[in-house]
Length: 346
Image 1 (spheres, rainbow, N blue to C red):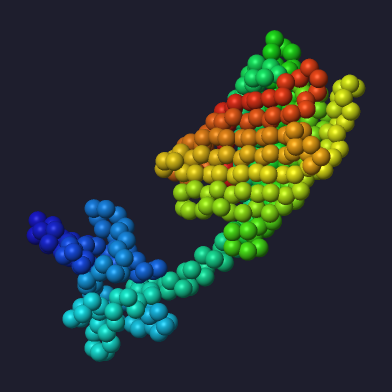
Image 2: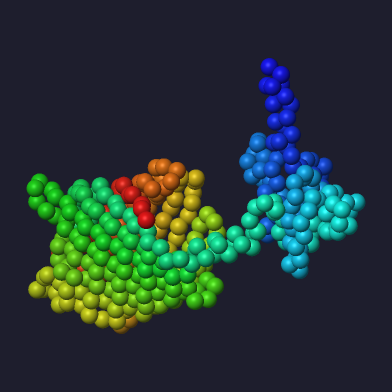
């Protein structure tokens, strides 16, 4: 019984070993994690990790040895104490610093933030493979009203500066034992960032669609991509460049197409909730000679994560192509909606 009582008394001393006093008079108790990018982070038991701007800090109290780095990159180690001004003093050294002077602060037994940042950057620069396989339950409206099954494979090889993106998809639908959709697509895109928000891209898409009487539809594009808006919750990019369109049609009534074109696009991804995302990819490919002759493509979907590791997800969306000059007897719009179960792996 006595041991339990002693544990009860000593536990708060362990949990609340560090404290931060805010300029409004409030005090946060917990584990001091450090100062990076002008913010102090403290781990609390009631609200998890809390970030406090150093400009709002009145004092810091800790009984463990800490390391700090100033803006001029001088580094000091020791136990810190409150000084009379808005700052801290290293015990038995006579060294005092204002909070505004501190660039980094961390536990001496932990890794230096500069080393951690270098390791993180080196890891981000490593070229890595990421794969995904998905199985679709699909429907179609336009040239046919049907349901079918499909498969899609995606592979990405890259880092934060450049990437190769491959995809392959196959969709087959039947109605009354009659095959009415038999569509195969393959694509490759290469992105390489060369200046801040700017990158250049090269991409090609190949398609075979028996329903549209398209033996081969190929588009190739080369241009510039601009990362318009980018935060931790959403990213929007726009692109523009030169393209080339080629179509080998299965109908004798329409001649094949081979002509230069332009490529314009918008890519958007956004985290709506903790486990819900929105992704959209829109392309507009007009002929250089006649802007009324164009292809318009879009794939917009909601993504629901099914596990914490984010390996399994459900993608539900609309994938469509509008061809302003279709084969005679076929509709301009070919629209498909789908429900895809996806598994991601390295």
